[in-house]
Image (cartoon, rainbow, N blue to C red; front, side, top):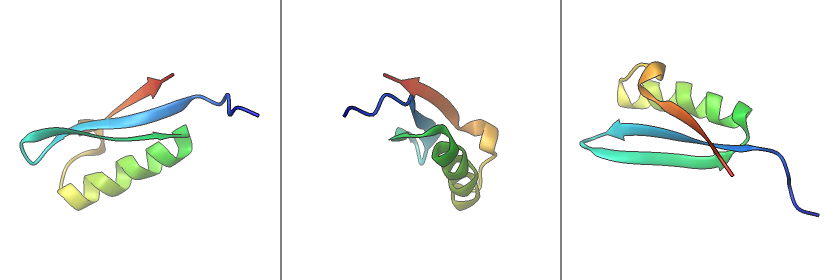
Length: 53
């Protein structure tokens, strides 16, 4: 059976390059947003959550 739940990616400009993490369920991406913001010394709002097909 195919997983039909929507998936999301996390996009950010980190260390002078565009990076993305995904595709995961929204709850996991939200957790990654907080975690990566603390790791890179950025604000969570610097990361963009994008829905992928």
